[in-house]
Length: 417
Image 1: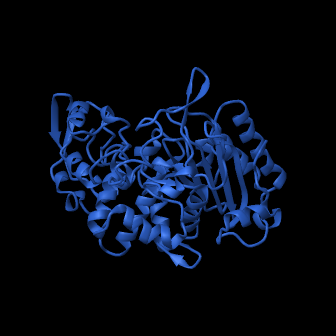
Image 2: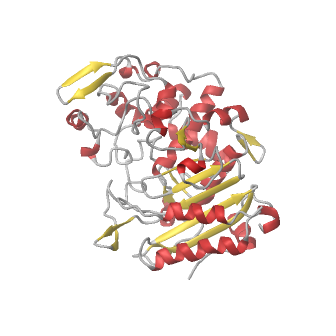
Image 3: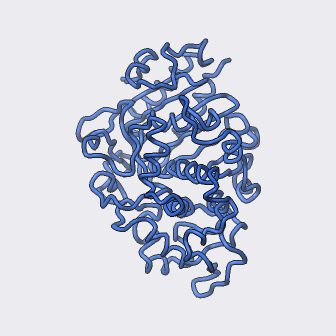
């Protein structure tokens, strides 16, 4: 049975300052309650049929809470149900937070989009590009901060012709998931310094290549601000926005709220193993490596507040992190055909995938919708044209399904005014 909360209970349970202190209704949100109820049925059916162990969904429209649902189990073995307060590993959803941190430093004049990354990480001063396993050529130019934000620096996660070199440096897929840093016993900048000595897989500015780019930006934030990434995030972003449940590593008193990770084996849901290919080190890890690319744990509520800040042009509840002009810049397509060639109707901005042409993309949304997801199955988007924020939280490893796309369809089909 669905554990979805009705609007009045939502506000009391979540105490969200960004939501009005009255129930979200058709009048205030423009979303039809009967159509929103389809989300309950589809998500609960996915749980009941064994597609997922548990899900949390949350939707805001016009700054009002329109829907929140908690379905299935957060931890089947512990008999712990999903609730709106359940905490999730959000992996690459961390990238958006790091991108905001960089843009904050750009606004302050500490960093520039055109800065060479070598200004902050000297090992990137003379990058080489791997052509084959046995040959390299010099990069035709250096890597800039903008290249890293748009994933056009030529840097992947080490699964390339130079894989042996990445392995020798203690990085890349042979060390576990290439994006995973939570088990690293050294500060992230030590790994990034080594990364700068490894070859690129493309000339900077010539291809969209998804990889360590945002982890490098996290190191830039540390060196430009003089704070660890955890401290910068906490002091400059999480505390001002009231994101009280977002961390790199969980406080011991909140460990019981973390959802378990599951995967699929022979068509059956199974608990993922401990370690970097499963449950991770977010509770008992070394707690010294702060991955700007994939390291955070959060809740649907916290991440919705972060997105609402961006949708509001950089401010929330009287706190401003960015100017509206900066938000417009960082949510505008900046990769052009380097991204859209393989994703028709979509672009990539300074941190997000951006919907450019809904018809060409074959996706719901208005031009300017921005979002992304994470390796544990989480997904999010914000749509300025429809004044909409939506968050989908789940914990899967190595298994995908169509639920995020179905969730998006259901959300947009509930908008009636």
